[in-house]
Image: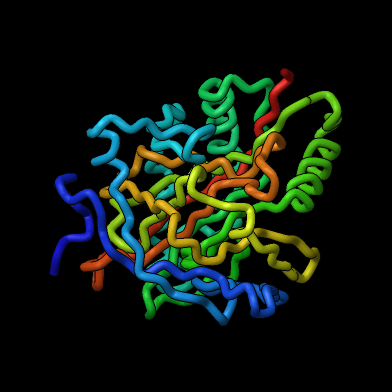
Length: 304
């Protein structure tokens, strides 16, 4: 089996299948039940074989990845916390029920230690007036013989091209988050929704993350999809196929590295609200350890 954790960056691209939304279908994700969601948010997808360029090779050739250009950055955030403190909880996902920390204990640790550290680092990295973390998702599918965990915070990697926000859902989340913490949206002339994607436990050898260069996306590629949860309703964008999309991934992602994603910007261009992304099946990764990663969702506020 070809190793999925690529030790060389000589190969500048892989050819893989990417799943796009079918805009003629009913774009609704109904999750009025607990437990990890499916890898695809909709039943009807249009699968396309695409070339996905290795961002590490492109960086070696001189390309610089920036949030305000391509919509994403490869980073090594200095968080000042023990990045291995979740290892026991993550190993427990493959163990019988009852072993290891509970999902509640795991999520409390993320909120009390990881949230402040990430807010501080993102604020300094982007020169923001304030950074507010409001949610996180652990992407970790347990082994087939482990007891399923009924936790809203854990989800499978999503293998449908999407962006996390539409103008409607971003404005609603902004208002809810700021008002709950005593801030006024009118005090901040610009805001961004920035996700930090962090590999955990081991190098990424399965279901890596890929992004579309934001400069190659058209407004007509975006389609609103309704989300229905037991306690609320939401909305995200899903993408239809466009042959000009330029796909990028970063090979051999290690714990300690991360990817920043600009998933909404109040100064967005028309309906192009944020960077499309998804997980994909890496050729040669059959039998590789399952990907384990953490997504931290933040609102970054600027006072000018």
